[in-house]
Image (cartoon, rainbow, N blue to C red; front, side, top):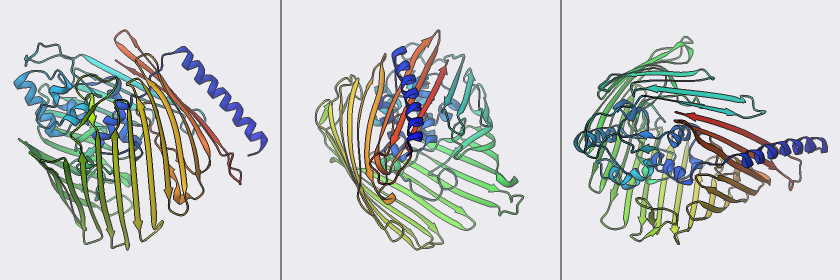
Length: 565
């Protein structure tokens, strides 16, 4: 880097640091709570934040400041939140009609379809507020709400982004962004009929026809083998991945959708589901017209089922297209001992893709109470460990891959925990071998947090990355500071590490080269009359002072503002 470039970068960083310090001095800061990160991981099935993408994390962001009112939300609101499956929604509505409102996370865990872990995770995104007395099954009322989220990243190509949402009475809602993204929904008084016009995402079954395609999840946890279908979900997002534009009409447990595709093509389809005592079954069909450029049309049909019985959970879907037939299935068995076993498979005909996976999980009976936590969910298992093996075979491309993942988490004391992960990947193409070892040490007393990570990866050579992070997640003052150093001389050994950001934003920088990275995240949170205001700032700098060849550093500053009523 030339002296002139370094001087310009230095001046920019001085301004960034000055702005950040002024924000810290003038406001109380609150960044995303680590408990929220853990809840997102559980609900998505991912083992680490690095496995997610922006569209996944963004859908949880609105509920961190304005939780879903689970006792007053209509069926349409519960479904469109994408927090609950159709079976869980039916269970909540049935419980409310029979026993009255759900008043706590502990009570939610008693509702059919919710495990203790599900309830604890959802506790970060739902509210148990109610205008009724305990046991009252009468209807409640809610007037209107609105939210505005803006993001400004100086110097970027798309520097300013804005999205707005509004809803009234649980029956009407609208949303739009400055990036040509919008939707409007209407629900009948009973909640049985719903109309959506604009942008949406489709998530039916286990993803064979829509969602992620003919493959097992890329996640590595037990819950990832079974996805959480949510139907047609309105989409107002900074990320365009998976978004369709058209019309969706649903009544009871049936959905009809039409969407416009590229090159003038259109897709139309229908989905029907049937919830029963311990699960639900569904069927999806679609047809895509031929595009203006002569592109070939498409069609598909799938049937899916999710079934839960004591000690066993089964998820499966079979799909058919004119040139493809696929099956994806997973079964999880909880034995009377301390072990759980899961098997999963995905197969696609005429024989060009096969995937198989198996996982064994061990969790000790001993529990450790967490410092700074009280009530339900204030303790965790002293030891949890799992081993998974996944095999991928692509005969059409003559590619094969075997991946082994071993995880372990120890809660040593109420405030200290250790985590480890070992991954070995073997392929007959590209980087034929890759080994990763990661060690995390986390200390937390409920408000203050100190964590460190050492991550080594070996494929071509040996890459090493380590960081130290400190933060405080309090009601009045919270912020996180991280210092990262890395030495990765070959791109095949690159290492990714998720960084904290404003809710709904996503940052997974890559460590490559020889250098360091400094980052800081904080946010301002307050109340104004009946509304909530949140402002976040994220600053980072990357430099490469130990590289033989010159490599330019980079500095970034990003602001996010949220208003909810």
